[in-house]
Image (cartoon, rainbow, N blue to C red; front, side):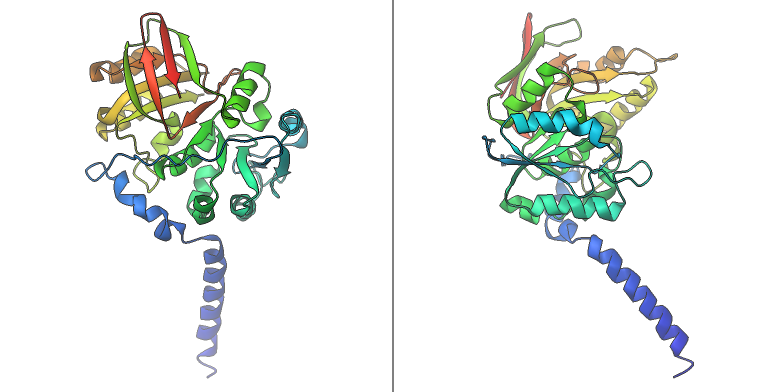
Length: 342
């Protein structure tokens, strides 16, 4: 027995560690999301036709502020939270909202547990991200969406929140790409988010410019931050774009990196599956000896002969208009006006 004791002790420690790890690693990949797995393999990919939309908000509803990405302070969120309350909403803050672990809003387990608690709360009608940065993809496979399917909620944000948009849009749920609580600085953008949440957003449009391509198409609007779309490729959360309209935007990248990301989408066959493209803001880019961003984008999309709405204020800039993702829209680009109709 004495000879067996060290072995048994090591086994007990290993079992304990494994148990603790499994506590955080939920089974949603097997029990829920794996049913969507073969849709990430293009040869097996089927068009997503389900459109499961959360109920639009009304005064008195509850919205929760979550933080899966970078750390944030109370001062940075004060204006946004006050605005949400002025809309007549009850605001709940995630347990980890003001915590910090390095760049993140708390440890992985704190972020997972806090977000899961909000997802599981049937009284919450919408989840809005405090800010972006990085971290959502780290914890995505640990989130159990089974209660979400019973009580769908609007998920709101952009940038790093694209990871959540992809996961939920692939499951057929509509989400909102738009300002996060830290970014409630531009009145027009904030008003567009309010309209989207309360079911009053009907169109987004710009004056047609030389980078647009005329035409019309209908399809699910999906996408978001190009870097996140690229990084989720080849995973269980690979974005399904079959017969969809793709929204892309990004910030702080070298122009050649955008080319690389688009090359990945082309080589994977994704671009050939598109019915239209919406190009948002590409801000704070580094051109160096590369082609300009508009030329890079045209090199990948022009031969597809699909409508392109180029240059709408969606993405990493002061003005960031809200739009619905995972929902069928009509894209119309005429000689004078380019419009997304919901």
